[in-house]
Length: 319
Length: 303
Image (cartoon, rainbow over all chains, first blue to last red; front, side, top):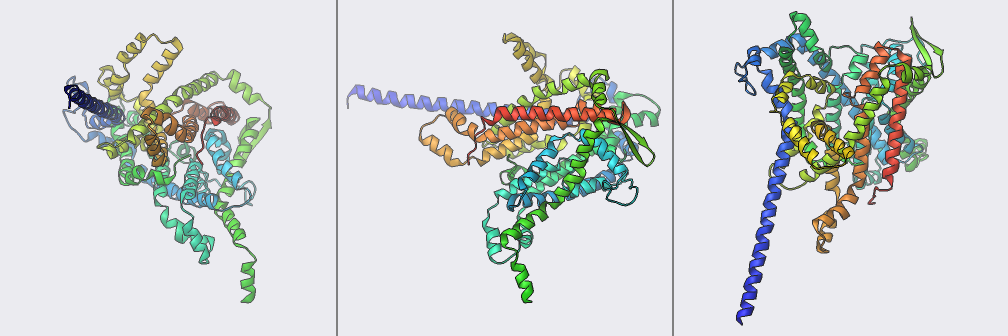
């Protein structure tokens, strides 16, 4: 082996080593860049929550203390106590929970049924029904809110009921009737999700059931329903959260004894009850109140996020 | 006994399935007609009438386009709020799409703590609430912190970054767009949860074999991204654009939504409020149609 060949080999080796090293450097840079981005974005998301947590434990004197920024010096539960009392928390919380559970379960059932019907059966007008579901999403609720309001006020099913009409405002009926028929708050979206999910399921199982002589209904209950869990979790969570946070329909049909509405009025209530005006102090109490409103949803999310985050590819949220 | 068996056979499986199809969709068909289509038609009628509540019902008085005229030319704020809402939507939707696509690409990679990162990124989905958002803008503590420059959002989007952007000597319109976007970063991040979810689901549905084949062919990551990821994701981009537009139009933090509601129940009356709602619906529909028209040529369908 000549000297020149040897040097060529060693040169080639060193460039490959150099390339390898530069590749590793860029890899490390990429990891650092990615970590910085993810941490930054997470911080922006978590910041307001952490902010609320820290300020909800501050006492009034911490507000004027210049040295207090993040950690309250005089830790106190008083804001929570006051928020519970002023919101009438037990009542309001029970109302909200009741309504959200009823609505989300009914919406889940109706969207499973309709979604399955649209995904697996061929019948005349199927595409029209699908288009109608999309249409309900596009029309702003503000456009139909006045007619709906009047219909619930003088409820006679457009002349179908014999009487002069019932006043359904102030009851859960508007929510129950719209949820059961798949026309509730963003219910069209849930129908689309369910339809997409059922379309993505393999057909073999159902066909086997049909060959065995099962009726379509029996096939649905015995074969399809047990597999619906991942999509059902997503739909339930969304329906619950949207109803929980909704203040538009609850104030329209019911009263202000629901969490989001009571919370929005909290500073006014405080000003009236305590007979003083101290916006800075009130914001501490409002923060405590909003944390109490977020907490149940966070707990639910913590329980369900496993399905949510890892099984999205199967829930067919696509398109 | 025999007759019953015969009766059963009168329906073929196909017919039986079609019937079941109607049965399953029946709740929605009924609900759509009663609680959606009927009010929808009524809304159009109401918008052309003067509506008065009388004992035991309501009374209509036909006045033509008077409600629309009032909303557009007499009402002091409607046109301004309307325009602001549309402009805000036009600014926010593209940034939401970019951000959520980018986040989905990030969250789809393998790294330590991915599950935690995903959990945090989806958190805004469960916390998007008009009330919480409205309360936040009036939150004394975060206002205070923003003044003292310790807010995270402020550190990222604050004067430093704006000054840096000013130095880039971009065209003025583009610059003002970029500055607006930068100022809206926290809003955009909080509005992106579902979009990230949809993109992530889309990324995971791209068959691994496509990537392997392109690697064998010697494609660079850059080429792979543009030749495979982008076309495969285009239906998701389309769905997300439509969803983001609807979401921004319907969200309860939307100024116009509140304005229409106050007009109907506490202001100029039911007829005018409904007329505003009808115009709002028309605007949403026109924008959606234009967007669908522009994007439909570009969307690639794999199947």
